[in-house]
Length: 435
Ligand SMILES: *[C@@H]1O[C@H](CO)[C@@H](O)[C@H](O)[C@H]1NC(C)=O
Image (cartoon, rainbow, N blue to C red; front, side, top):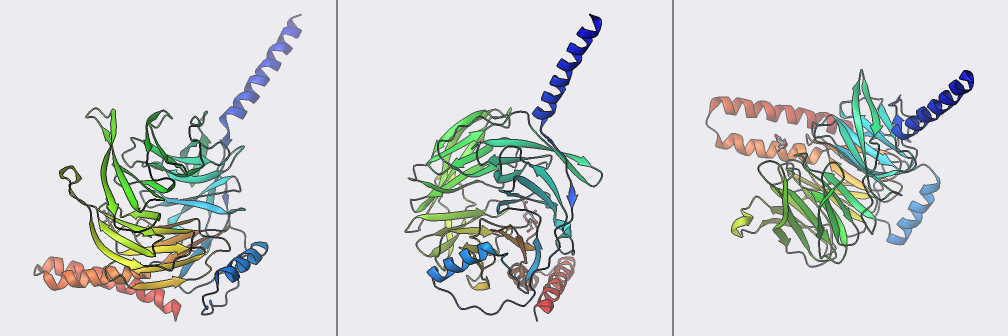
């Protein structure tokens, strides 16, 4: 009798434990060396611009093989994903890069390994789904992922372990609220809200627990891109109409959510928008449109006094969609991807600085600069390409030389000269590899 009860209890307990294990969805971080297999190292032959049709055929063909790419300014190719990479994010402390892929994993890379031979990553499994977008929390103790099938947000806690992290998913995903595919997600640097945007005209502002604070109707017919500003005050969106709309997400003194209100708009393009990007202090924005131009804006305005952003520069880009735009954190450089190519411009002169062709075997899915303006990073196929930001070094040197001419203070002059020398020596090292 007693024995039977004991058996029943232990069977029950066993079941509970199994259930708990299944629910907690623990994923352990595994440090894995990237698969060996060097890419063909022949230097990229100067390419003629292939026609659109030819190019698509070429891409299709390459899908079957492993796409190879090499370029003298390529600092690293990060390989570990077994499927196409769709999104990148740098942690705000600059130490980590997160990537997600349809291989059902999110990987966390250490940025200090970029110039090493081996690039190790830590893996978080996305159980029963895969992530299309990934963003670090401001304190780098969690990340959020947008689930492809679940069409909502899953939060992963990151716990520090000797030489890495362990990851665990929150017990419950956010409720599914979007009626169209999610095109981007974000977390405010203030830690006060999360944003999700879908391809219809909806943006949702959430608290960190998964409650919707406010919906926004962008009224742009369709959303092409939306993002949270790096300062964490604004949400911006663009789409079919030729403008970018910016809202402020307002909180009260005690931190309670108050309202979302219109802040300002960027108006001047003459066709639908592809995307936009902020500088790290949110005082500059770059936009790119199907009208064949990109624009740089000064958004450091008192919009509450009806001041509009100033247009600082208009340049042209090789129109070929899909495209994305990335403004470097210091706002000195703009990079635009079109299908699988990348063009880099100086925002100071508008001049084209670099051009990279067929960087990925598929269309480029994400493009970003690291927090220190040292690298430009792209994704498309399974590899993550890391380029030296030579245009950024050149622009920084030019700016510092201008400042040097204007200063009379000896200490400032010495410091500037030292910074110029350092930047020049880094640039020389990179360019020596190029020649
Ligand atoms: C932006 O980046 C620059 C370096 O380019 C850095 O000095 C500055 O502190 C950063 N600002 C913010 C708000 O992160």
